[in-house]
Image (cartoon, rainbow, N blue to C red; front, side, top):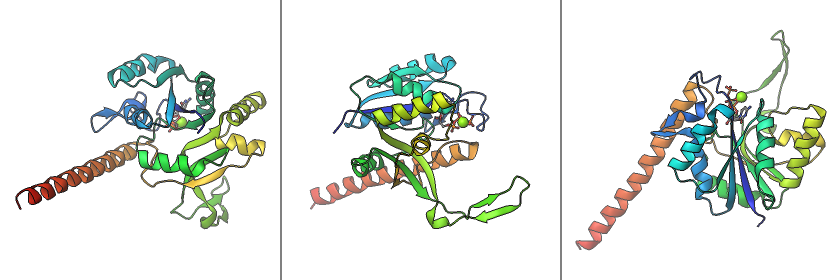
Length: 248
Ligand code: CTP
Ligand code: MG
C-alpha cells in the first residue's frame, strides 16, 4: 500500500457554532473535538503522517493539544482564508514520501476506525474517492425568489462527507489548477470533478456528522456516550461470562 498521509483542515472560525472561538476546541466527553479527530488517525497503523492545519492564532493551542495527547505522527501548519486554501497548505506540508492523501475535517470527530479502514479497503483501486450517504429529505432546487424550479431524484442524491482520498499527484494538480484559475469548490473532490477526473462514492455513516451548530455538538456528545455505554456493557458481559464459568 502507498504511504498514507492525512490532512486535517481545522483552521476555520466556527461562525455557525457561535462559541466565540474555533469550535474544534469545544469539548466532547471532556476532550477537545480536535483531539477525538486526530486520535483516530494516530491509532490507525495505515497512517504514516498527519498534518493538522490551524489558523495562525490557534497554532499554540494545537501545539499544546498535540503534546498533551502525545500524538507523535502530527505536524502542524498554518491555514488560509477558505477551507480550500487550508487543505492546499496541508498537502504541501506532507513529506515527499506520502503518495496517498486522505482529507478529513477536524470538525468530524465521530468517524470510527472501523469505517475508516473499510473506506481504505473499498477505495484502494480508485485514484479519487469520497464518503457520502443517501439523503433522507426530498431536495428541491429553488429560484432565488423562493419559487421551486425542480424536485431532484432522491435516489441519485448523496450528502457528501469526509474522509476523501486521493492519489497525491492528482490532488496537488487539482489544487494548483484551481488556485491558478481562482476556482473554489466546496470540497476537494469538486476540484477534480471540475478538471474532469472521475470520483468514486463509497457509502459513509449516518454517525459521521460534521459538527457545525450547537445542536450538532449535543448530538455528537450523545453518539459518543452511546458508544461508550455499548462498549462498557460489552465489558460487563465478558466479566459475567467469566464469573459464571469460574464458579461452575
Ligand atoms: N476550515 C479550514 N480553513 C478554513 C475554513 C474551514 O481549515 N479557512 C476547516 C474547519 O476548521 C472545519 C472544516 O474546514 O474543520 C469544515 O469547515 P466548517 O464546518 O465550515 O467549519 P468552520 O469554517 O470553522 O465553520 P463556519 O463555516 O460555521 O465558520
Ligand atoms: Mg466554514
